[in-house]
Length: 563
Image (cartoon, rainbow, N blue to C red; front, side):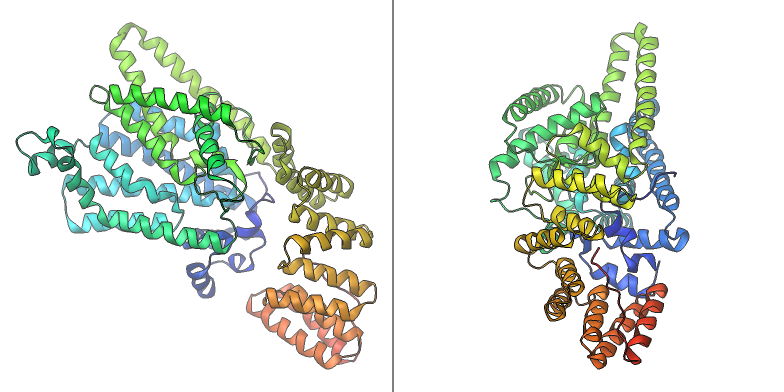
C-alpha cells in the first residue's frame, strides 16, 4: 500500500483518465460499456477503477489495497475450490500457497493497471465453482449462473477465452465425468469410441464456446482499432512461433528460479532459435511423461494441459504490444503447474512414507523462499523510477524501459538524467516516436526549442496523426511569433482529437494574439463547456479567467503543451 502509481498504463486506466477519476457516474458507465480505450473492451475493469476513485480518489494506497484484497480472495477461493473438487486439503493448500506467495505474481498484484488480472481470475474461479455446483445437480439456473460469471470474466479480461477448455479438463480430472458421459452414449465399450466420450461434454458447453468466440472477435477488433495488434510484417510468423516456444520454457524457469523479473521483456532482434529448441524439447519430454502416466496420475496431465492451454492467447501467436513475454500472463496458467507439483509431492509421500518430514521441510523452505523473494520484488514497484531502473538493469536493448525511466525521472524534476534516458532509447530504436516526443517536451522545458521542434518533426514523420505532437509544434511556433502556422497545427490537433482541451485553449490564445478576439471567445466557450462536462473544476476556473481577458480584448500570454 506504500507504492505509488507507475508511469506505465496507470495513466490510461486512472491517473490521466478524467472520466474514471469522477468515480461511478452514469456518463462513466455509458462510456465504459462503449469504449475500446487501452485497446480492449473490458467494461467491468472500468467500473472497478471508477469505484476505487469514488472511495479513494487518487490515493494510490487505496487502489493497491483493492488489488491486494482481490489477490487474497483469489488465493482463499482457489484453496476452497480445489479442496471441494478433490477432497485433498493439504495438496490444495500447497497449490494456493504457491499461487499466493510466488514472486512471479507480484506484477499482477502490485500494478494498478493490472486490476484486470486479479479481478478476471476471481470470475474464473467463481465460474468453475458454479460449474462444479451444476455438475453435482444439473439445473438450468446453475448452468446460467456459471455462464453469467464467465461472461463477466470475459468483460474483465479476454484471456478467459480458454476457460471452456479448462472445464473439459476438469471433466476428466477431478470430476471424472468421461466414463459417465460415454456410458450414456456407448454402453458397450466407450474407450473404443472416444469421440462419443467427449462429444456430450463439448455439446453441453456450446454456449461457453460461443461466448469465447464472440470475445475473441471483439478483442481483435478493439486491439486492431487501438493499434496494439502487430502485423505479420512487423513480427513474422516464424519469429512468433520461436518466441512462443521460448516463452513457455522461460515461464517454467522463472517459476523454478524466481529472480530477475522485469515489467517489460522486449522482443529480441534475432529469433531465439536456441531458446526455442531447448524449450520445445523440454515441453515435448514433459508432455510425453504426462501422457504416459495419464491413467495412474491424471492430475499431472490435467495440470500440464491447463498450463499449455491457458497460455495460448498470450504466447504471441497473435502479437499484441512490444513484449516478448510478461510475468502477469502466468497468473492463471501456473495454477496448472502448481497442481502438478502438489500432487507429485503426494505421490512421493506414498512411495516413501519415511520421507514425510523431509517433504514437509522442502515445501516449507520453498514457500518461505517465495514469500521472501516476493517482499524483495515489491521494492521495485515503489515508483516508476525504481521499476524501470530495475528493468533496464536486467534486460538488454529495452528502449521502452529507457523511455519510461526518462518519464519517471522527469516527474522527479531530474531533467538531465531524463534527457539522457530518452537519448538512449533513441539510440536503441531511432524511429521510436514516443521517445522523440518525450525528449522534445523535456528539451522545450529547458528552453531548447529548436532541438525540441526537430524531434517533434520526427514524431510527425513517423506518426502524423498524433494530436499532441501537432499541439506542441503549434506551441513552439506561437512562442516564435508564427501564429498562423501555430493555428494550423492547433486546428489539426483538434480535428484528430475533438475533445482535446489544451489544443482548443491554445487555438483561442493564438486567435487573441492575432487580434481575433471574437473567435478566441467562441473557442474558449467551447473549451469551457467541455471542461464543465467532465467535472474538472480547476481547469474550468482557469478557462473562465482566460475568457475574461478575451472579452476585454486582451491576449492571455500562456500556452499549454500536450503532455
